[in-house]
Image 1 (tube, rainbow, N blue to C red):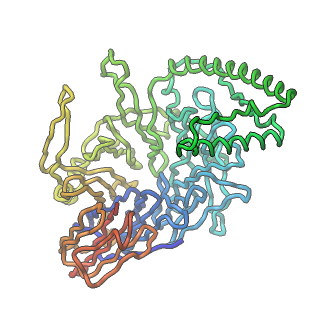
Image 2 (image 1 turned 60 degrees about the vertical axis):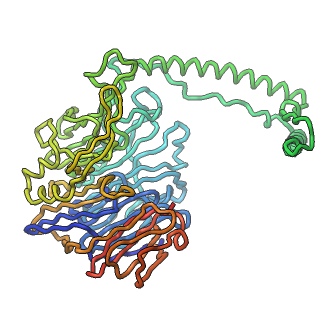
Length: 594
C-alpha cells in the first residue's frame, strides 16, 4: 500500500494564536473527522483518504491503487494516539497507525462482501463496526449487515471479532435490512448503531451494553414511533416461490440445439441490419426445443404449481402492505446519523416526521426534520425533542450540549448549539461569543462571505438575493469537553470560477500540544478548478509538486511556470497541488481535471 507524506511548513491560509489558543483555516480540504485532542483529522472522498497530523503538519495520502479504495469509519473513528479505523475496499476492515494500514482479523472461512470499522475507544482497546459475511447466511433473510466488535488482547493485538446480539425482526415482524454498530463509549462497554427495517426506509436506534460478566445485550430506541400504537401486523410470507427454469428439464442435446438456434438468430439479426436479408428473424423459444413429452409434462405441472403459489404469496404481501402503509407514521430517524457522547450517556439523532403545523389538506404531509436526544442514564430512556428543523446532528458533549447544522442540503449550512438543560437552539457564533471572545472575533473575520443565491417567494417565484458579510460556520465536530472544534463548509462565493471546501479548527485549550503554524504572507491563486487542460497559478511560488490520490508524484518543478498543462502531464482525475512560496509557506490545493 503506497503512501505519500506531505510535510507542510504551513497548510493554512489563516492562522491565529491567542494566549496559547489556536484558530486555523484550510482551503481546498474537507476535514470531517477529528480526534478528541484535535491533533488528527481526516478527509475521505471517492475512495481516497487524506490523514493530517496537525502537530507535525504532515499529510498522509491514500488513494485507489490496484483496485483498492480506502474509507474512514462513520463514527468516532480516531483516537488521540492517531489510530484511525476504516476499511480497504469492501472486504478488508482495517485501522491506520504510525503511517501504516493494518488489517483487522477475520476468520479463515470468512468471505466479507462489505465492511465498515467505524469507531474506536480512546485507549484503542475496542473497535466497533459492521460486516456482511457470506457464511453467516444473512442473504437468506435479506439482512445485509450485522454488528461486530474487536477487542485488543494482552499481547497488544486485536482478536477475532465478536458478533453482537441483535433482533431478528424489525418493528413489522420482518427481517431487518441491516443492523449497524457505528459509535462506542470511552469505556468500550456501550456501542451505538441503527436497525433499519425490511424496506430500508425506517431506521431506528439501537444500543448494545456489556455487563460485568462480559455479556452483551441490546435495547432499541424510538422503534414505537415508526408505527401506530396497537397495530398488529399480519404474518409476512418468509418464502417467495421460485419460478421453475425450463432449462432444468431439457437434455444436453436439446440445450445444444437451442443454443445453436440462438447463435443463428444473432447472426441473422446482424445480416438483417446490414440489409442482406429482408425478413427479421424469429426469436427461438425454449418451449420449442423441449421435445421429451414426459419432461414437458413435468415442467407444465411445476409451472402451474408456481403460478398458484405465487398468487398466494402476492395475496399475503398485499394483505400485509395494506396494514403496513396504514400503520406507518411517516417518522424515521436520520440514516446512519449516530451521534453519541464519549461517556456513553447521550445519543442524539434527527427525526423526520410530519409537520404538526402543516397544511391538513395537503395530499402528502409536509415533513420536518428535528433534533432528538436520549439520556441513557435514565432507567427508561425517553426521547426529548429539541429545537430546530431541517437539521443534521453533529456532536454531543459529555454534559449533553448538542451541536447541529442546518439547512441540511444547502451551501449556507450553519452550526447551532443547544446547551445542556435547554431545548432551544442558538447560533454557534453566539455560543462562541459568550464562551471565548477571541475565537468569536476570528470566526467573524474568517467565516464571513458575500452570499449570493436563489430564494423563493410565497408563490414559488425565484428571487436572486445578495447578502454581504454572511457568517457561515458549516458542519462542526466537537471534542467531549467542548474545547476543540473542527468544521467544514462549501464556499461557493469567494472564487470567480468555482467553489471550494474550507475547513477550520479552533482549539481553546491554553496549553495545546498541537503547534500553531505561522500566518501565511503570500496569497496564492490556482485556477480554473476544475480544468480541462491548463492550470494557472498566481503568486510568488518557488516550487510545485503535484500528487495523484495514490500519493504518486506526477509533476514537480523548481523552475516555476505560471501555467501547467494538466491534461498532458496528469490526465483526468483529482490531484493535490503542493505550492511552496518564496517566504517558506506551503499551500495545498485539491484540483480536478475533467
